[in-house]
Image 1: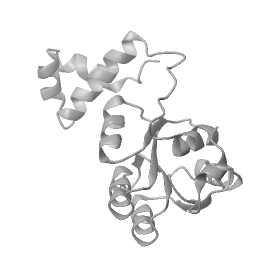
Image 2 (image 1 turned 135 degrees about the vertical axis):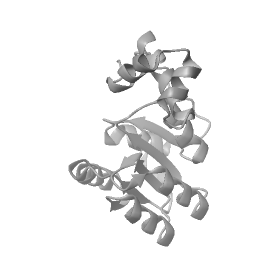
Image 3 (image 1 turned 45 degrees about the vertical axis):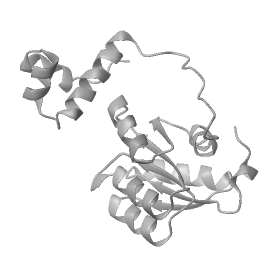
Image 4 (image 1 turned 90 degrees about the horizontal axis):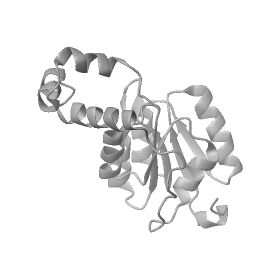
Length: 182
């Protein structure tokens, strides 16, 4: 784990998540690590904080009740280009990870991520490569991720996705209705 002294002068941290118990636990854990935490439970609140007081660090949930956390990431990048941003989501898919990084996120973590994982991601040096995964994705998971990526590229149009994947539409609908494989 990186040392908290690496934070420098500005230790401001925005936590954006609509899961209230998770948000409270994470806020306490990050305060213990030396961050000055400000919490937001909605995209609107996150945008307001990012505009008025852009933090040095941010942890943004991807899917919130009132929109997409990437909207807050865009504002943070615009207002404070040096901020380090980690995107969290319970819907981990490669397509959304790529979108988050393209918009300006420093890193992307799937829930459940603990405070140590988040701190390490926030404080990681830009040139540091992550360690190889201990348990790589299964072939079923890789297939599911590819289907999700094409589905997102087709703007969530099932018929167009099925055509591009050369798959029957009903088969694709059954795959999309299931949970992601491990």
